[in-house]
Image (cartoon, rainbow, N blue to C red; front, side):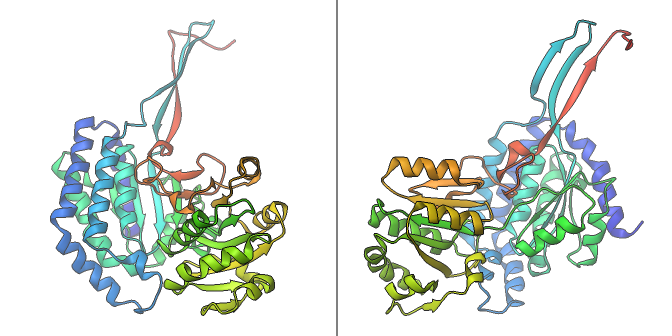
Length: 414
């Protein structure tokens, strides 16, 4: 067995100890980890600076990689919140006594060993580890080369907190960042129960197509905001700007703006200034291009621009004749992540909620709320866009499966 394979097997063997750990142990380990983050802010920032120094300075994805004091405090706060969430394991889901005397119970149990492959974002290392520890799952983490130094510090802090609280540190394993280790993870069907990719669409598709371990997808986002003809235009401006610029490098940011023809001229007039302050590059189809002439960062859109997850200060814009055309466009280009309508027409809002097939659908709010923390679930592993097992924020409550417990006194099947 290779060294990577050995690491994965050791994680599997260590996982048993976490299932019997006490509640106080688990909570204490998480609180200690959160405190340790804040106490070691300088250490984390130095490691993170080394990672950032290896990147091109104008790479828009650097925002995902970067840590600062406020982000570290936010990660620590998130870990504390996870520790306060109820244990999702050990819940009695069903109980019945059969006519033959068998006592049958269905209970929630950990998945076992959760594998994760992710790009750039070092906060994901802490998020996944915290969620897995709280749900009594072991985790095998495969971060990217870009965040290598930061992730090394992270796993050291995680393991110290576990060991100090009597939990085997081997339940959290960081694999080498080299790509060769991915193949080991793909074939570790004996030792890894589920594999979760988090990152670009290319990464997600690669994992789905090559892994023999069952995959739970956290999908890329091509997210839309539709400004309907009955929209409050001032609110629409605030929502569109927030959805695009507050964190452009994340999956719940807006990629395409759809505007009803009846309000397009008035809305674009209001939008150009606020959007221009952030130098947002706009790719517009012909009608929108004509109405936006004079906007300094305007470009003509190609068809493929409407299928792009920009992950930067760029978006596509299209004028539509009505809600039917907007819904058709979303059906064609959506990745089923997050979609929003801005309108004062309750009937059209309810139609949008009912017809749009996505993990999160909004009326009169920014798509940026598609996040476990924002929706009151604590940290998340990612946003699932598939429909089996989990959809939407993949948080603590979904890191379990079911087990049937049957107690008898000698029954045999006839």
